[in-house]
Length: 560
Ligand code: AMP
Image (cartoon, rainbow, N blue to C red; front, side, top):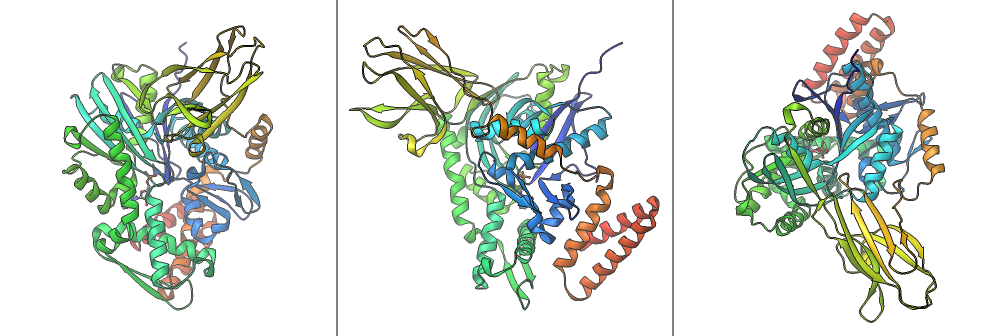
């Protein structure tokens, strides 16, 4: 009997939406969720009975129950931020684990077999700590990370199969919360990443937030003066407005704070509001080209990835910077998941793609704190420079400062600034020095693996022999106890049953539509809510499915 081969899966754990794809019969294929949709909103909500909702139902509840719902938590991955939802407290990685768990369940239902491992994509510019937290989120969801792949690199993998030419490509990836620029070269079978840069705090959500600020300013309203539900419904309406701006000037009516108010927006006004954000997109592009030693004209192609590249303002900026339009793009929403599944297949040496070899780079400089010049402390000594091809291992020699010193402190940082205080702290540890009565030499070796995770070894050259220290792979500040507690907290949660999700999602959607409308339209939606509740009470599956389909289409038509 032949052992069943585990499915080859790729996950795009996005700020706004997450997707899971499988490699089957020589190609990557998206897996639908319980609603038949391939995009699962990265939103978690705690229902009134304390059970957890993930995805579309949770997103609808962002408007109706903002204090019980959380979105865009990927932006806080690696920080100590906690989300308090309906009396329960969650870390960003716990919320991410709930999203990953839902994707895992969807894949198991679709494939009819257990799912234990996957390739997971992360923004290229994610730090060491953010990568570790992503691995921990997967662990909490019962998934082993086969490999972390940088999102733009995953996009390149998806494209790599379509094109058989040698090309220099710039991947411009603007998602909901992060911005990555990657320059790579195809010389199949090799896809070589030359440079990766970005901004972890810039994405489509910031463009919506800027509209919200501008709109409140025009209305002379302070955000603190509006209740959370009304503010969330305005944010929702502005998100819609942003997405429809490509179709022409848009008008918004909102009555969340007293009498109805109007706001209109056209492309020119939007570009004015977004000027500071658009300006921030330039620097990483320039840096990536400089690091790859290329001019814009040396590029053969430009690829746009991420939902926010659908904005006309962003497309125009790209066209101006590069003097041409990006001429090829697959669906920017799905390409990363497809590429991650392709990478899973590549790892498993699937025949169809066996010949593709991918090289990636470390997107930021890694080094340690040292003394500079006449003993000025706090200087940053790079060991692995940004955009070094990975896996990489580099060694640098350092010396103790005085003969009687009993230990040296190795402080590891990442960043591009000359002083460690301006860079990101990763870890610190002490290495004891043998008492030789002389200045000691020590070699500090950094090894950066293909997942973007760092290891540090220190070797004392005299007397101390080899002294190795590996950086702890578990997230900083999260000891075994805290990790155990996360496991226990998640295991105790009541997750909403998957097969009940289509009904629960429609109820949440109807409630949101009721909040968003007024007058006759609101009355109509109220009637639909009553109708659906009574059909649900009848417990006739066919009737429920028919009513659900009709009401979902009616809401689609009203764009609610
Ligand atoms: P991602 O994280 O790649 O799913 O990107 C999601 C981001 O894309 C969100 O900030 C959305 O607001 C944005 N987005 C999606 N579709 C559109 C659209 N048609 N126009 C403008 N922005 C969009």
